[in-house]
Structure formats: C-alpha cells, structure tokens
Image: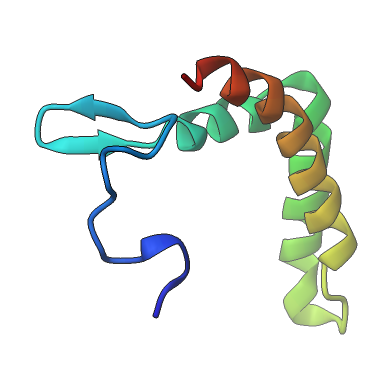
Length: 86
C-alpha cells in the first residue's frame, strides 16, 4: 500500500487541504516549490543538481546534498504551512 494514501482519494476532513470543486489540493506542494526557489534553499538545489549530474560517473550517493536540501525546504515550509491550518 502506497504511503500517504497513494492512489486513494484524499479525505476532505484533512486539515490544510483546500477544496477547489472536484479536486482537493494539499498546499504543501506549492509551498515546497516556492521554498526551493528562495535564496536560502537555491544553493542547496544547485549542490544537489551538481551531485546528481556527477553521480552516474562516480560512486557518490548525493545523500548529504539531498538531506541538506530537504532540511532547508522543511525549515522554510513549516511556519507557512502551520499558519494555514485551521
């Protein structure tokens, strides 16, 4: 079974979700996209992309770069997401 519902429909009672007619949208996806574009996280995006480009040619895993990027995005998203919850 896929994590977080996978192909199952999201239930409208979940907090933080916006109903746009037939579709329920989780605001975290848009917040993550915006946070990846911030000055603070853009440097981690560049480092991760550079590592990803090198990775097929080396034994490098890019785990460290990925974790740094996720931590930056989470730090940015957290306050904004919790401000939207009811």
